[in-house]
Image (tube, rainbow, N blue to C red; front, side):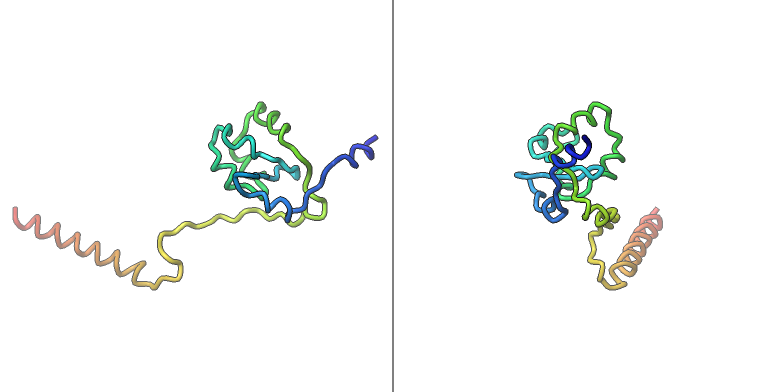
Length: 134
């Protein structure tokens, strides 16, 4: 009987899933299952941007980190469209932490040290002259 149910499972490759990473088609992977969340984007309590950031990839870790309720977990089952292909299950990598900076990472040392040092010096001189007037 388990063999019959295996034949009804639709498998998707990572390549196929990655193509669904926009608002017109938003797929994510949770625990090796593939979810089509396109119709749920506007209803998601955390906002559609949260889902769109995960679109086309594995959202399992982020889903678990949020601590979804049992109701949310039950509702999520209605969006399952298949499973990640067994050949691709080992290819999923954990997301790396992205370091957001406002300065180009290849910037020279003076933008990281000299400018702040000069700023501190100017503030110290302004404070000194302000206190000297009293």
